[in-house]
Length: 80
Image (cartoon, rainbow, N blue to C red; front, side, top):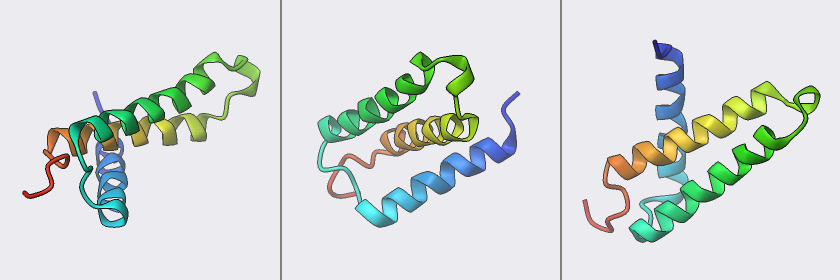
């Protein structure tokens, strides 16, 4: 079961990004941001287990979740 804290944290990351950057200019831009965040997590996945920073991994996973939430919320449309 998902922890309520994870859901809250992802929503907070999404809100912070929304305030800082506004809506995505397009769905393509939203996807590019999502892909960039996935690539950042992938770097941790491919790193040796002894070198993994679990707080950084959590942060990257929350960034992915936040972008996905913003896409699901339709924040790639200029006018909402």
